[in-house]
Amino acid sequence: MSIIKTLREKQGLTQERLGEIINEKRTTISMWETAGTLPHASKLPLLAKTLHCTVDELLADQEMKYKRES
Image (cartoon, rainbow, N blue to C red; front, side, top):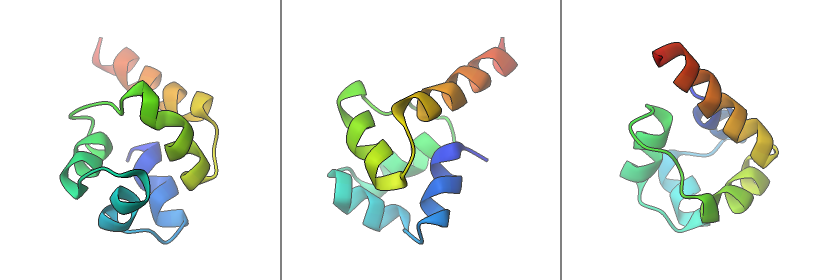
C-alpha cells in the first residue's frame, strides 16, 4: 500500500476529497496510490501538509518502490 493511501485514509479523506483539496482529479490520486504516476513536484508541499507528513516522507516512499522494481 502506498504512503499516500495510508496517510489519506488515516486523515479520513476519500480520494475525491483529497483531490478537491489539492486541485487534482480523483483518478490522478488513484494513479498515485497505485504507483501508476508520481505527484508533480509542485503538488508535494500541499499534499504533505494535507496528509500531515513531510515531502521527504512522500519521496522516500517513492524511492523504496523504485528500488523494489529495479
